[in-house]
Length: 401
Image 1 (cartoon, rainbow, N blue to C red):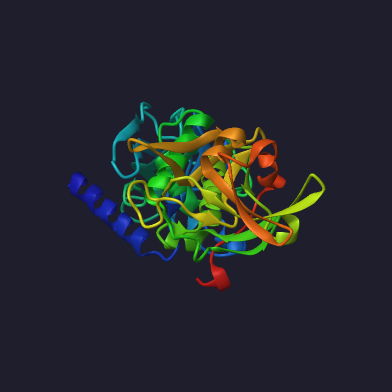
Image 2: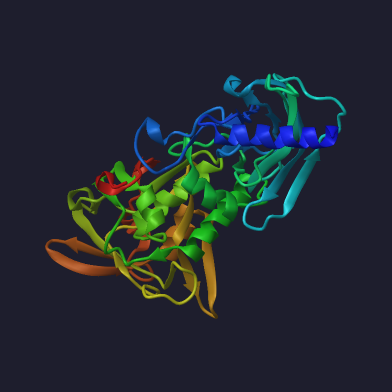
């Protein structure tokens, strides 16, 4: 009879809690290296993920750091006397592979205000999920037994866990959840900046689609700024022009904590800013002709080959190294050279440019790198602005929900 009465109380307690309008409990997560997040779905404060986070909400933390699990009880549902997390599980998102399973090793109930330290997060970039299940000891004041044990589980409402190298940097500070889902997945297992930058650049080239420059998810162009609609680019299936690829690659890299990154263009936008003085004559750079390119996605696509561009945009660091997920350099024997930390001069420039179209004394001529560029050739290459820039990032054009 006692066992039946206990079971009846458990069922009744769980039922009463489930029917209540306010949740009975939530599990806050704490740690010294947790970072704020945005959803990346709308503008303003409504887009911020609550911080500090609780289980069921996204979590961003530095690699190798540790989290602590706590409980926050709603007094409307009685009084919490203690809690016992039977297990906490961190798994790789997508595959479900268990990274670690953290069983409770104690024999006593934890105090209501106690925290439960978890194992260290992986010492590399990771996209994971975190959930817990256990028991709650609750005083309800109900007859015949005022105390009941209630099971809990968040297995169906896990937290997305984004493990990053370091605090996300501008323009991803705070980082956007819809960007981290890609960057942490693509850079999974990367333990350093060089590896993470390489993997997200290659993945963008593999998964993105260059559209020939006919439309963009960027606007308000100046030589030192532009506005990039990140959510629009993601919703497009990562389809866009070189500005979109460069700006999104910047977001991917900075979201996982890589610093000293900007975007830059090969040339100024205005023709008046493209004048070069050589031997007391003014040469105006009009366009440039590329070498053979593999445009995203990797492999055969519509805009592979040679192109004529007004400018090209790429991601750069303060050492003049370039990352470019929009293109790879197509070489003989089907060899493609990825742009991953390539020196901007001369390597990137010379692999990108075959010739410049320049105008002098009203005459337009093609100046090829292989013949007439000579000692003045580098003057037609005009990285703009000199120190790069960080675009303004927004969710969707015209405020679309």
